[in-house]
Length: 171
Image 1: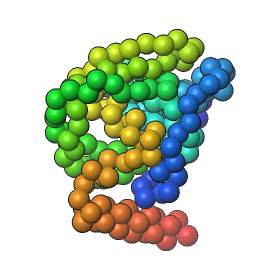
Image 2: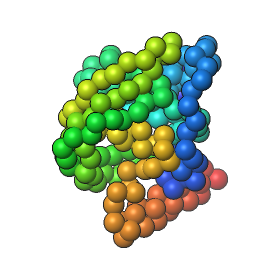
Image 3: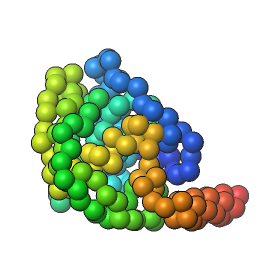
Image 4: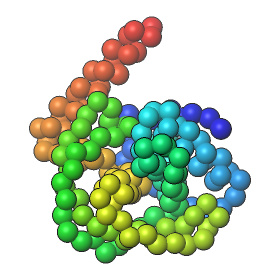
């Protein structure tokens, strides 16, 4: 297992639409383990493969307090959205930024497990919000896309400046 580098917004690779997983093999198992280790180390509650520069439709999440309830969604699809909720969201690819985002209050998730077996889950509350956030990543969308242009520009400038400062300090 390995902790992978998380891409930081506005990195253009976060805009890549992820490809479906067609091979359920050892390489997929290694990817999922690396994603989980990366997510836990960050620390975060969800991670899409594209955030570590792997354009595959793979999501890991763990919403438990003890961080012992890893959920894996391969090729997730969101169906049957219902209601509206507004929650404060953050993102490992947009460090230090939180904002209110409006999403469906409930969704049904159709996905496959690590072996390729299909399953469905009805989600509400945090699970609903988190899976929508991660599926957005798989579709090349970042949560700041829900913000006004002014706020998007501020976030972009702040993170670009932070990256420049980090590079200067490292040199």
